[in-house]
Image (cartoon, rainbow, N blue to C red; front, side, top):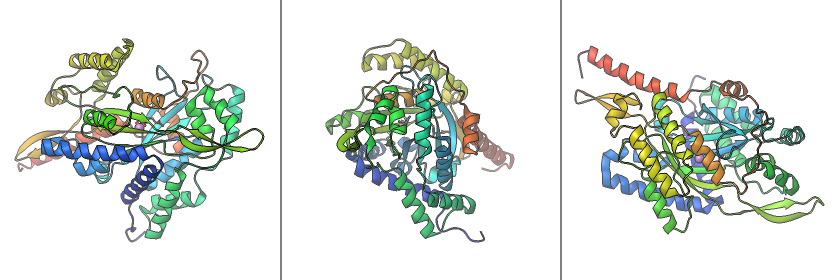
Length: 446
Ligand code: OOG
Ligand code: NI
């Protein structure tokens, strides 16, 4: 088009994140408490530590920052959500296979939709962890259940045609007019609201015996936002304060420990949502009131993005501590700190010197400074832990049976879009900053 659209992709993204947040706050009151505490903690950290506290993200960005999680049933649904997110400038990044996550596997593969350019992340970093059920995986589903599950999923429609038309228009034109934007936001938000349609109880329970996640996805004719996660600058302070507000968190903070060295990757913790009323349909056709507990609250703190070498060390340290199978959160914490001291250098400068973490090079007062690049993605072990903490039943799977080959290329093919490699994005950002600094030096100026 010859003129700039009224509402740009980043504005659609920011507005969508706000609307989902409002929706989730109405549906899950504990989320509102979590937001209040997160805002308190962030304001206090910045008041106490000033600019230093904002090195991994300005207070403005962090206050608005959320990630959501959604779960889908079919490749077509995934392709459609990819089109809706593309309209908002959110692109698929990374491939996560949670089907062999120990100790409790989940029958899904996942990606995250998020902005990829640094400038877009700065405008609004909203990201959505998106999981896709794999009914053909024999470790979870036999042929008969697979067939019935796929038949059930094939008849539902999550994304109305109007929404898909608007999304395609927005992607093509780089935005929408005001009326189109309003309609797209309304339709897209409605997709993720909790449905009040009766749930077929026998079907839901049959799936739940295999996997609570399978029931959550394939047991109902709709989808919903599963959680919405604010970002905090001090997750330990938040954790301590939530108990005082009457909300019981899970035992552990997932990911790296609190320690004296640099903060890397991602730390997350969560609480289980309360029962939510849902009507159930019984085999005789009658509808009775009931409840499901499928949604929860989560909070996260983000640190420095690690290089492949840094990440390999992280994975080894996590595996080492997991192998100890320690019974209490306190023992796990102490073992993790101990592993960290052996695994990572004590300072940010050494992390960069040793090529373990990504940084941007910037010229300040004629000198080159290195600034951390923040981790914008997820961690499969933590994700599996988050799924697990949210399940009433462990489910059953049989690791001796055949899995189904599903990888990043398969997912990209389903989406019909490039699936970005997170490491490549961070490396490119680091290289671009270095090239800018070199150009300044070559010009002999500051
Ligand atoms: C997704 C769990 C993963 C995270 O933050 O690691 C996740 C889900 O429960 O659907 O959101
Ligand atoms: Ni999450």
